[in-house]
Image 1 (cartoon, one colour):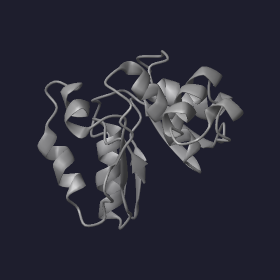
Image 2 (cartoon, helix red, strand yellow):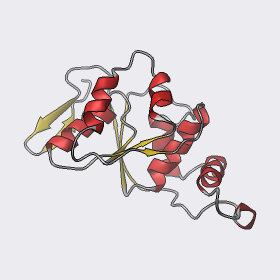
Image 3 (cartoon, rainbow, N blue to C red):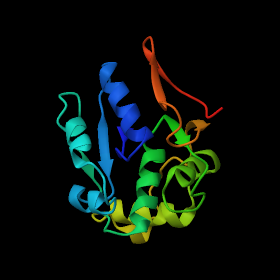
Image 4 (cartoon, rainbow, N blue to C red):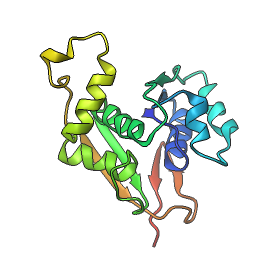
Length: 169
């Protein structure tokens, strides 16, 4: 399971996946300390517990700088390296900032050419980028998009050997 280990569903899915025997492949758009600094009030010990698990790979740090464009490049990375995207979205923040909406939109409708170009240039520092506009990266993947309210009920529950999302109603 590739994840940015963000608050909420990212962490819930990571915990359930580890409980079920899966491996976690964390990816961060910037160094971990900067990533956590952009989320004031975040319980870092919760993330540390996932990162220290024996079935958690070392995080892939994209090191794209500390700005919102880094999150769009993270979204491009997640979409272009996924066979399936499980998107849990609370319906808020429908903008182009690399969040759940933006990532899901890229997976369904294709990656924005500007975001794709920025990502490929940042990932190809040793390639002659004058010969290619952007790397040949997939534009989409299979998407399961589940809209649910944040903080309603128990969120993700375990049912046998699978997890499911509890709808708001």
